[in-house]
Figure 1 (tube, rainbow, N blue to C red):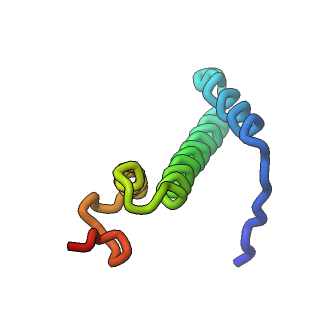
Figure 2 (figure 1 turned 90 degrees about the vertical axis):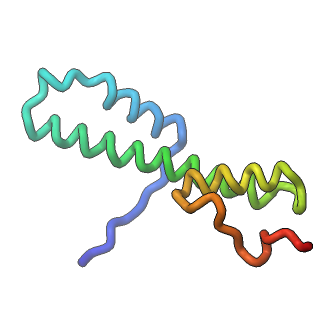
Figure 3 (figure 1 turned 30 degrees about the vertical axis):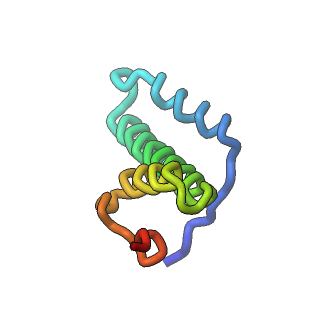
Length: 96
């Protein structure tokens, strides 16, 4: 199996492509093109979710240690990542 190559595009270009896809009128497109547009929408929405998770993770990891703000950001990241809210690692468990 050949690994797909990855490319980078600016956030503006990425958002412009997404807006273009949303603006298309599905009813004037043939079935195969409609399926292509739906596939692209799903892939782009997945990328937006990944970007949001990455942003939340970075905010959590760069927050001041042992602060309420860090814990709030940690919970937000865990929620976006689909990890149970009560999950704690040994480094995050508060000491008695």
